[in-house]
Amino acid sequence: MPIRKPWTQPSAETIRAIPAVVGVYEIADAEGNLLYIGQAGGREPFGLRTRIGLHFGLDASSDDPNPVLRERAAQFRWEANQQYTTKRLEMLMQYQRDEGVEWPPAHTAGDWRDTPQLGRLRRSQQVGQSRG
Image 1 (cartoon, rainbow, N blue to C red):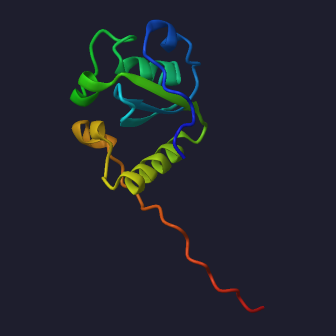
Image 2 (tube, rainbow, N blue to C red):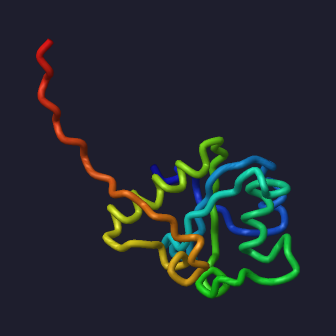
């Protein structure tokens, strides 16, 4: 369920190239280690473009308040998705399952409102056939 796009280096041009749509995004360090899984909803004036630009200080007057992102964020990738909240939760649950830790590094350093309550991903049990 992660985003299946190559990582993009942040610059004024690459941020401007992001369409003004809702969706999800990932931010990683220079080595490609995932730092953050975010979403841009309908309240962002230009959706993903605005939200990603804020993290890299390209569309805002100040740097990201999250210390992990401020110090280590080096690349991003995004996906337009109308079901952005659900998609982000699925991505976070898969991160927990695959990495064996609860949150990507920037989530634990960020605002408590950015750590939603998650379920656990697991294979479903084979259900016996019902008799009818």
